Amino acid sequence: MSLNKYSKAVTQDPTQPAAQAMLHAIGLSEDDMKKPLIGIASTGYEGNPCNMHLNDLSKQIKKGVNESDLIGLIFNTIGVSDGISMGTYGMRFSLPSRDIIADSVETVVQAMSYDGVITVVGCDKNMPGAMMAMLRLNRPGILVYGGTISSGCHNGKKLDVVSAFEAWGENVAGKISEAEYKSIIKNACPGPGACGGMYTANTMASAIEAMGMTLPYNSSNPATSELKKEECLEVGGYLKNLLVNNIKPKDIVTKKSIENAVRLIILLGGSTNAVLHIIAIAHSADVNFTIDDFNELSSKTPLLADLKPSGKFLMEDLHNSGGIPAVLKYMLDNNLLHGDCLTVSGNTLEQNLKNVTPLKKNQEVIKDINSPIKNTGHIRIMYGNLALEGSVAKITGKEGLKFTGLAKVFDGEFNANSAIKNGFVKKGDVVVIRYEGPKGGPGMPEMLKPTAAIMGAGLGKDVALITDGRFSGGTHGFVVGHICPEAQEGGNIAFVENGDKIVIDAEKNTLSLIIGKEELELRKKNWKKPDLKVNNGTLYKYAKNVSNASKGCITDQI
Image (cartoon, rainbow, N blue to C red):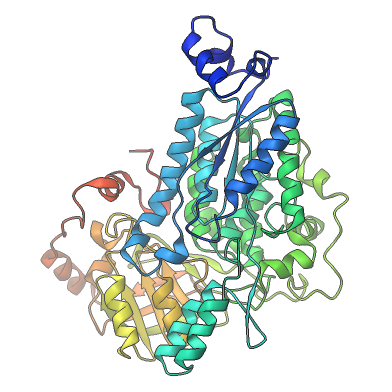
């Protein structure tokens, strides 16, 4: 079988002289024209630490690809920094960027007739976007994560980006001085790499490693380590093997490998954003995987990792304890993993783990399975009259398992942020932030700023927050997001009024508005659907095409 299955249409066909002339123009020889062309899709850009080093890593990858008798061709796609856009209007573009990344990588690889693709990714939406593209293409491919950032330091305390958000809440509450606040900001992020806790970037990188679409240790090798550089050089050889053996992404991403990914996420205490992204990835893989599958797996998977945001350790600590492969080995040994799933190494997951060094003795990051942080997972899918089509809660148990309080309603995040800043939110409140869903936002922005402010103000155990928006992987506290139907579509969250009683029950997995049916129907009758907040451009197209959150906010299925 020829390895240049797709590129030969432009490199070998005598009726394509212009294509061949252009390829000669970029420096390809006659011999090069016979080799497979491999697209190297970099999400590198200078604007944030998560992605600032990815173009350099791409050059390393290209070197390894060319040394494997393949032709590596780098192209770029977009990225949005969640950390920089958080709490601004720009955050509305974050989730849509996932689908733009998927569309652009699919477009370039298809249009340029590349035989395989290596995606080089950093910030949150890069990983699922790249995975969606690779699965749509179903050509040999490998994902390379740029790695996690080193921790910052202030007064002997480890810092990360969420430290900066929570410091704002502490500063507003008068708990720290302006000088200390500024010092935390300056020292939180010391250089390249994605945010250090088990936030969305590290969550998705870990999940994709468990899924089999990265090389071992890809997700836990630090961004600036020699290990990351070595890994990049090795990728080309592994891609060559995928081409030779005709191993494609849909051979790797199956129902069982997705279950492996989800169980790892739950064990690590990963981001609720994973629910959206895993469902979208499954859709691209033609695998039936729903929010209810999350509930089933969460009910029989313990939370073992003491990682930020709810815990105290960072990904660099997990790396020093053995890395993600050591965690996967522990899961396999405890019957929490399907070991027979194929990976991009050409081996099964179990084969990859055979010679992996186990978790270090006396390490504190991953608890013993017999002494878990929580017997079941932190990700809870909730239903009820406030979430007829589902919602996603992040319940570690540290803030309790049930919350009953009175609604403080805000039509939009910015109003909520001002209220929290000015002390309007009190103990016993359930903060309701609505019209921030996929269509209502539009773009379903993250609510890290209000949740971080609540935590920073010391109200984490005393205030709950529910929203039809979503949360950062850095969010913790008693929070429920992804409420479906969203307010924009006439979901019952649109009819909540100040002072209404709301009950969040993480044992029964219910989210309930305590009012009579007649009163609810009266409010519905008096409600008028608001116009979309935009009438042109990217967000307008997104609002018109996006599915609800329970279906993964996909945009390629009407």
